[in-house]
Image 1 (tube, rainbow, N blue to C red):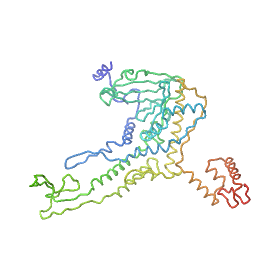
Image 2: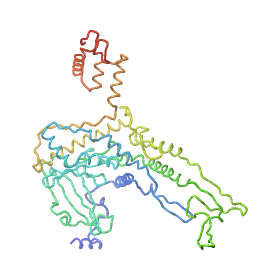
Image 3: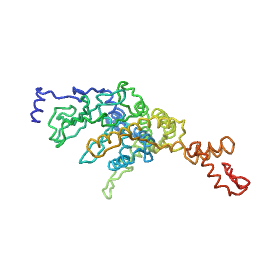
Image 4: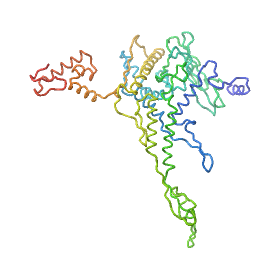
Length: 491
């Protein structure tokens, strides 16, 4: 039947769908998805219009790949690690639910996978987490932006979507479409498979059971109030399609700079290749001679040695000349660093975050102040990531209750605490507060509140405890908080 459908499609009796955007139920902005493909190429390190170079030699036209600093990968990984890492804490008010979610996260290696897909999110403009049940176990599916097409949304909340995924079998391409749509108050999940022999076209619809035995074509759910997928995106306005709920890459508006960086880096490498040491020798000295005694062939200079170049001199001149050129190393490094500063600002980082030392790109590790562009970008992205994590947990709870794996409480609260240790380390803050007290610019209570993150009453209680512990201190010893005194008693 599948072969017959394919034949009828070729004859035009059954219409083959040329592109996924031609599907009657899918409305998508092709320009935006073309950009996602470009962002994905740059993340992988090769985008043909950028990195395929054609050049001419005396042997004709040749091609080569431009060297790249892989800044798309670097900037995505750096932002992902700043926003979400192993120090990020997800707290749930209900202890039983917290244990259930922790178990699901542990079995799905959630923290590692989520950070990976958070990196893909910053690179390609979005990512999706979708829970499902397999063999009575809660599983989590992670989807990249190129495999997610929104169908309906309310403001920026996507309510319906289709998830396309491609696979190959017997030299044919197949596309699995998983639909998540609403029919009134019923949540409908549909599964379809399309076959294509040509390559780029979607093809014709074929039997699902041939590829996914046991997977139902339609599943209708009436006990849901929200979609069971969670979409996140970088907190950057979409200037490719202002009407779309989808996000854009954090380097979407820095592609010209990225091309300039790779051009400068490629030139830096070629400076060494083209500026290598060369010695000019007379052409008549680079020749083969025969040893009359042994009959063996001898050369004055090895013709395969790249150091020597044969040149035709005047007959009366047989000098050997060194024409080594001066390398412009410092100029290249300065140029690359200037471009890296511009790139950092365009992608949400402070100038100076990235630097090139002639061997590789270094990332700044110094303290980040609360007024820096890096910190502001981090806090901005955390707003969407926190909402996304809360939606993931809500989706897990909904699916778990649907399949009878867990009965959640009616009311619970999810709190996400991100790691802000990059802002200022504790030792630096303590030293600053002590300096303020010494110069009588800060009260003891305020200093303790800032250092320990306490409220007024808690700070006063801590001061009282410190005073009591220091009641027996030496009469001459007075600490920076003024807890010691000349009478040996507490204040």
